[in-house]
Length: 97
Image 1 (tube, rainbow, N blue to C red):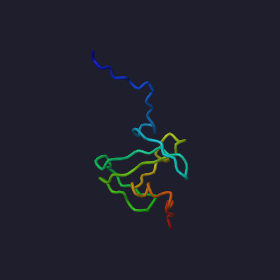
Image 2 (spheres, rainbow, N blue to C red):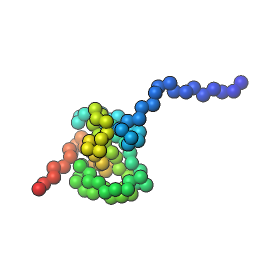
Image 3 (cartoon, one colour):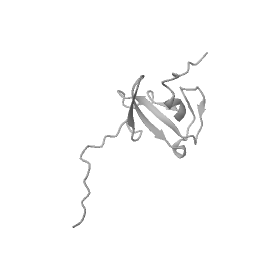
Image 4 (spheres, rainbow, N blue to C red):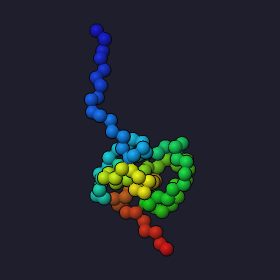
């Protein structure tokens, strides 16, 4: 008798308004939608709020935005993977004028 694969009946929900699939992460700073960006997909320069250094094109990193938002570009922040993991121990840096 042939084997039948069961299909997951839960509806798939794209998160983040067209920015790809994201996972939910909870932390002391709230709930976040998080998406990993591969180095081959990273084509722009960004400034990491965790260390205030540049994320150059080709660098794998994380995009995060508040879970209660829909992922508009104003809400998303690009973080180095290590800075995102350490955000509970050392919050975002303050930019000095």
